[in-house]
Length: 529
Image (spheres, rainbow, N blue to C red):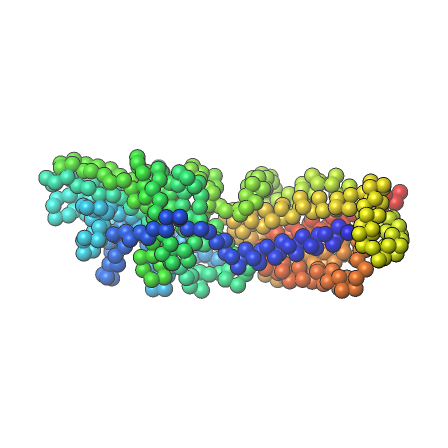
C-alpha cells in the first residue's frame, strides 16, 4: 500500500475524530457521591439596584454591585471583543438574557450574606471610581457595612499593575458582646445557554472548545465539569485542602482561589433556572467579642496565560486545555514561543516549526520512499503471485510475505512517519484553538487571525491543490475503480473540511505538503541515479 493511501486514511480518521469530539463536547463524569448542594446564599435579591463602583488597573476594569460586593462586569482592556474592534472583551456581564458573575461573601450563623437576612448587605464607599495610577504598586478599594449590632465588615479589593488576579479581603471588626461564627464563600455563576451575540463559534465544529466549570482538589489536579451535569442536579461536594474553582471558555477563565488554612468545600449548584454555579466555602472562623479577624481569597479574571496562572495557584495553568495530547502541545507551544520571540510573527513561527518537524523525521521519510520504490519494482512479481494463486487467498498472503522478507521490505514502513506527523498535526490544532497568545494574531495580507478560519478560503484551496498534486505525482497501486474514485475525491473532501479550520493549522498543512513534494522529488531522483 502506498504512502498516499495511508495518509488519506489517517487524515480521514483525524477529521472523523474532530467531528466526534464536537458532538461529544468533551463529556465528563460527575462526582461519585452525586450529592446536591443547596447553599444558603443562593437567594435572589428582588431590588433593582443602581449602586455600583468601578475598579480598574491597566489591564482589567471591574464593575462591583454594592449590594453584596459582587463583580457583575469585567472588561479586559488589552483584549478586544472582535478582530479590528475598539471595544474591550467583556468577560463578566449581567444583562436581561445573560448572567456571568463572580460572587463572594460571608455566610454561616452570623454571616451577613446568609439567607436569614432579607437582602444582602449594602456596602458604602467614599467614591464610585477607582483607578490604579502608573506610579502605584497596588490599588486598595475598601467598601464597608455596619450591622445593627455594631459589627463593621470591610470588604477590600486589591489590584496590582499588569495583573489579572484580584485579591478580596474581609476584615470583621466585632465590637459587639457576642462571638461570631461565619464562613467565606466565593462562587461563579453563569447562564448555561449563550446568547447569539456571545456564541461566535456556534456554527464552526472545528473551533469548538470546552465551556463549563472546572475545579482542582488534593485528589484531582484538574477536572472539568459540564454545565449539563450541573443542570441535572448531579452536583459536586468535595472537601479538600486548598484547591480552586473556575469557569472556562475559549482563551479566558474566571477562578476563585481560597487563601486560608484548613479544608474548603467545593460545590456546584443550579441556583436559578438555566444558570449553573460552581464555588467554594472556607472553614468556619470565630470572631471573639471586641476583636478583629481577616479572611481572604483570590480571583483570577482574565486570559489563560499559562506562565502567569502557574504563579497564582498550583495547577491553574492546566485550564489551558490541550486535550489528550497535552504532552506534545505544551512543548510545541514553548518551541513556537521561542520562534516567535526571534521572528516576531506567529505565522512565520508556524512555518519554521513545520520545517523543523520535517527535518527531524526526514530519515523516516527517506526510508519510506525507498520502501515505496522497492514496492514498485516488485509489482510484476506480486501480480504474478496473484495470478498463480487466484483461488487461494491464504497462499497469496504467504507468498507475498515471503517475497517481502526476501527483498527486506517492510510494507508497513510507510505508516511510521505518518503516525509521527498526525499527532503533531493534532497537537498544533489544540494549541491554536487553546492558546490566547494566538488569538487575533496576524500573518500576512488577508490573514489577520491565525486562530480563526481563512475569511476568503484561499488557504484551504491552496492546501487542496497541494494534496491533489501529491496524489497525482505519487504512484498508486489501487486497481479497484471505486477506490480510485474515492481517492480522487479526497482532496476535495478535505478542502471542504479545512474551510472551517484555523488558518494557522491550514498554513502548517500547506507548508508540510510543499516540503513533502520537494523531499519526494529529491529522494526519487537520487534513487534513479
